[in-house]
Image (cartoon, rainbow, N blue to C red; front, side, top):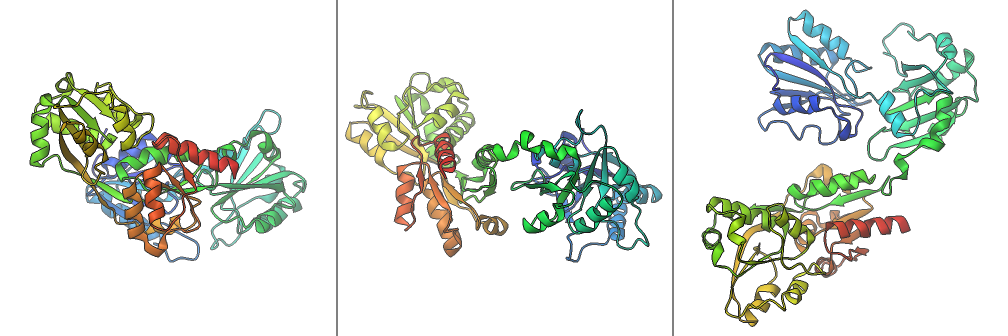
Length: 502
């Protein structure tokens, strides 16, 4: 359902992991005219916004000038009265220490319609990611969410420390780092046991989440020693002692490691998603962009004459995608390849063909042009028409070898790879990376040209195969890890093996 105009949606974006955003929140982001967003929203939360949507940052950060809350309320009222569909996007849940209640009251007073879209709050999400159940049959039948940092303009605290100390369950303090020592002392002074288990969870559910455990009496000292920073939750209760048995996030093989992905943006998302699932903090820094050439005369001619070819060679999933787009434009489909021998350079290309109903006849064991030449040794090409559909800048190993064997070879460039301008935030994030992955020679060349001396020299380079590795070395860098299988799955296997050994 699309969002209605003249409505402000108070939307919870969840605690940080993009996978914890609700479908409703994503649908509203995709249809909104304007989005007013906070600092602690998940990475990529705004990717689905319309190109013409207004994106207005109204986040707050300690020690940094920010938009006053009253002004935020005025802007929301103004946008709602202008008939816009407005998303007010907040980290966590808008009604759990999110000031969503205040904003809703302002909107109601001004006569602006609003709706609330709950989000997963950090008090249950970050604790779960840390392996701490906020309730447990043996330890706690109740949980209390408490602000660890009250409004400094209040004349006196609204917290009843005697009641909190006597609370028969788990205490979860939001925004609790700055006043941790005072809060812990207040709890103990009111009777909470100093030896009760406690934990601090930094950047819960975000890449690089850290958790430290101690007791109520020592948690402040531990947090200071371990340099735990905001945003962080403090958990007090026997359930914190369950972490040793229940923690799972840190068990993921790439937890705490930062990996740079340099594939083209359209392809990077799959690799990035897999890496995140393995626990990595991923920096997407596309070095190349794929530009289609299926509008060129040579591509149109090849697509129209596709039935004339006896052998069709495809050297990448991109090539498969664009060839079928060209066939569709020419009024053809997979049936046009029924009489041809179809060769794919590797399993990724073969999978792309299979998605269009074509089972590749030839797939080499090694995923380089030389191996495809060897795999085609038993295919008769003498006097036969051959189509090599590829990138404009690809090497000529394959077409030259087929011509030497008497084939009538047409080389058609379905696309070209061009250098992608680096995002400065991604460049900054990449400086601390442990791994940089390269999936082609063009990603190497273009990224190094784009970054220059800003390439993270301490990072280990992971190469998809020998051709890419050669380009790395030609540029004066070392290859730490090279995939045995020269596809993305092989690259992942090689990276995981290296991480496990280090």
